[in-house]
Amino acid sequence: DVQLQASGGGLVQAGGSLKHSCTASGFTFDDHAIGWFRQAPEKEREGIACISSGNGTRFYKDSVKGRFAMSSDSAKNTWYLQTNNLTPEDTAVYYCAATPRTCSSYSRYPMDYWGKGTLVTVSS
Image 1 (tube, rainbow, N blue to C red):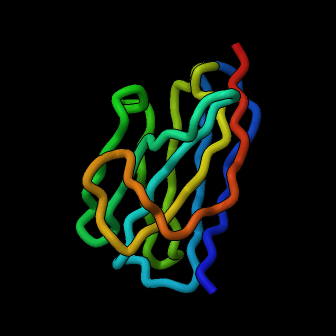
Image 2: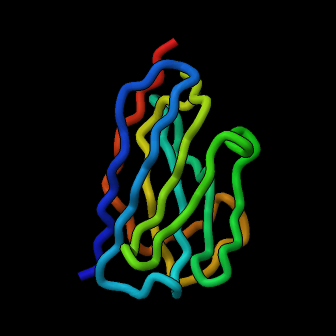
């Protein structure tokens, strides 16, 4: 079975940081792209970042560029999303998702596999 195990949400003050993890099982790390998405209260889910594991190509939504950074550890089959300088506007449920295709933008659809969302609340 393909599974994505997500973690890293929490409550943080504005200006703080959180690091999300997304650990995959059931598929080959280098053959997949990982997208990060979020859904704020009463808003649609949006893509915010995407990384193609094979060549390391990264894309970020403008609103997170310079504050969020993706990385990965192939030995652990894990991708990370470091989120810094968080603002209340970053409050959302965050998701990771995977696809055997590559990223062509920060918002790649469709994705084939989804992790459970993790809630991030940023207080002012």
